[in-house]
View 1: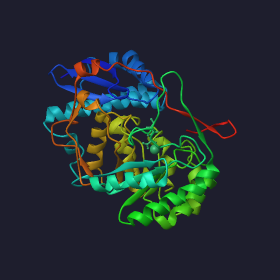
View 2: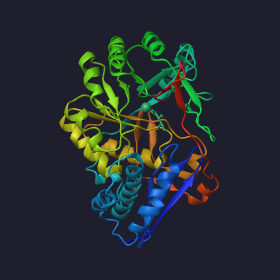
View 3: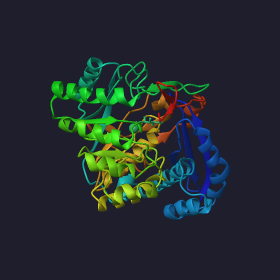
View 4: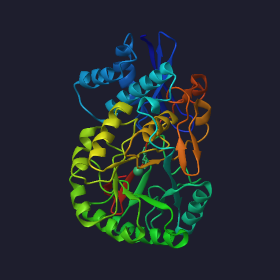
Length: 403
Ligand code: CS2
Ligand code: MG
């Protein structure tokens, strides 16, 4: 069998997604997600101009060899654009392999290690009472774990707080990035009161998570971790800018609050120190931005040796193909921790028809052969690409800060 066609489709059913479609000489079709939010066309070009021509004529069964060919063959290492492009090829090849074998991908990864994958939702509020109401809705739906984010008083447009409907919490402007504001001192005083209110109302029988979105210094993060200890968070996420692995030595020295990081990282080398020095508890890299199933499972295997668990990024800007791929890995690996699930806004379901399911706080990828997501190219054509930027952030004095 040979790969006979490789094409990239950029569509915007609710938000932008980049999808790679591979066709084989046996008529089997495999799909992969190549979405890099706010920089979509860079990956589309990397694939179209530099990768797709190399795939034609290759044997789709040789997943690892193709991975090595694209990674080593580029000479330039790592990075979000290249690793997202390779991830899309990798996932599409696992999809093909599953369809050829007649098995869901998790069976090819060693089979299920659990009956379902615990996911966390994202409850937010413009103030604490609104957050509590939204939190209650998640509990009603059966969620066992919920991330809590509330607007910091005096700080306009806090990260993680939706402008409108409670699910779309990331503004995306088409002409230039929206400007948010930030002040860590106000946030550090406020965040523990949010946890206190949630624990007071809902008790300790539900997991609480919180996203710091790379905004603190190491010692500020250490202070936050320590202040949250009485409320027993499941984790604090991305406490400091992720590229500085050594920052976690400082945080770790001061708090027992579990630490998660990695949604902006792309390779096993980006988390090597974090894992081998046991500086984190959960690694948050996603299938789509980290070289696909083949590479992320190596990260998880390394993490297993050091007692680190998975906690994959699952924002709505990763397409349903990415979410399905994550669920297959989550189901199979021994050291699964938790999976983010933000869901996808309409009309994404018209373009991506998925077989995964949610029940009582757990998800399952389904049992159809392959990844379990059908990509409808005709439907995708009805939703053309729309340029969108992620926001930027300024401190109250006007200087740039991490968003
Ligand atoms: C966030 C993301 O879901 C999360 O944990 O940190 O929403 C992140 O901001 C986006 O994926 C950026 O595209
Ligand atoms: Mg995050």
